[in-house]
Length: 616
Ligand code: CA
Image 1: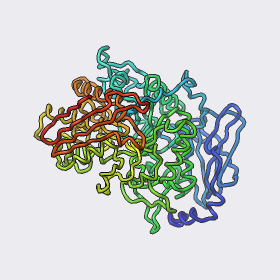
Image 2: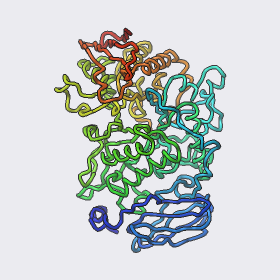
Image 3: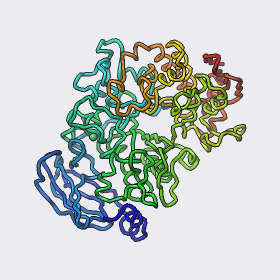
Image 4: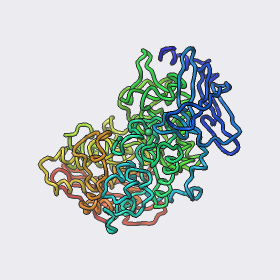
């Protein structure tokens, strides 16, 4: 076999690019009553055999069928019958080497995703799926980040025992605290809070949890195995490939019917392991390598997917469109978007706009990477510094606002405006303007999000699954403060970021002082620590009420909801003094109607833990 670097040179050659870039969108398996088609892209294989199985795991293949070599690196096989429910994988020969692989393009798989499954997708639709519609997009989007298992794991949620930790828990919209019938939990609670979008943490098939293992196994799931298949451990039966598909659709269907849009957290920047279906079927095509032969590791997870290569870009684009089309997903949060290239992100935006209407599907991501990456051929990374090159409707998580309000997420002892840092006043004003440039801003810090054109490019937040929860950060930076004092600071943090422009985002439970006991990275910590504690949501009800009120207020204020390029002009007459920030919001609606045409806010800092909003 060639070395990684030799492969890289080969894939970059005009000869390869001319002959092996496949144009059609029919890779994978199409399975209907009119027949079943298998297509795999493997430009360097000498032969490919399709193996068919009755089971998704164990047992020998009942058939070994040679695939036919087509143009552009494609191998194909067509059957007259509907092979729904048949499991399969491929045996590929590269010279003398025999490689077994599942299908990187698969839509279904067996337990733990090691074997693919042919699926007639129509047969996985829950009842009424053809009538499933996302709720109308309201005046403002409030995104609530949620993990499938964390949502319903704790007994306090009142979910049926057999659904706890599963997609199925989302089919129970009327849960209450321990089933007391009085205190809403789960979806009823979220509805009452006023959030509009539920962002589901990774729910594609990932590798870090054994789907045949104990129910208590936990991981966030940022380790993709099968990009186009739902994760099996959240289903009631991971051994039968169609079950997880139906149950995920049911989850989305009920979320929609309860008034929420659904955002999917996608991790196209790396795979669980370098020994992936990508690698086994097209060695080193889908991964970045430095020119000195080092394997690119900008993800800090062992590999970087080469989004800038044609067939890889095609894969990612088609995968996004598949989730919108088949699962009715309403938006995408790109993990480490800074490892994707600007061109691909803009192409995805354009494709979504063409199909669904401009800006209808949300698209945003983390505009950073964990380390240097070996992006090639002059591709430009979708990093914060390149925000000006991204479409106006591609958002980025704004670490500047996050850190200005509560202090650095990475340097945990460092405070922000609310917990006593000096000199943050102007950053709070800039946060309010979603970092869109204003004239007096010309001398600002180059590191800050330069080049933001409109608040639609900014995700305004102070907590996410990464790093300490807001409550833990307050404890870390204000060890001398008692619980009442921290509650006051928490309310102030919420009031600050909820009166900033941009799209609002919060980690589930931020509004009830969620804690992970100070842990910064709980990706594989026990579910007992990670789970949402619905008891706490009622113990800290006054904080929840504060969030609820702020969300309701914000939604009534066009001056803050405005996502247009001129929105920053609505933040005016700012005054800052040591520990004090004040500004006015021009609150006229685009249609000229007025509601509190001027809104003045004052934010006390180090010495005045108070927030006052005057409505005029
Ligand atoms: Ca899995």
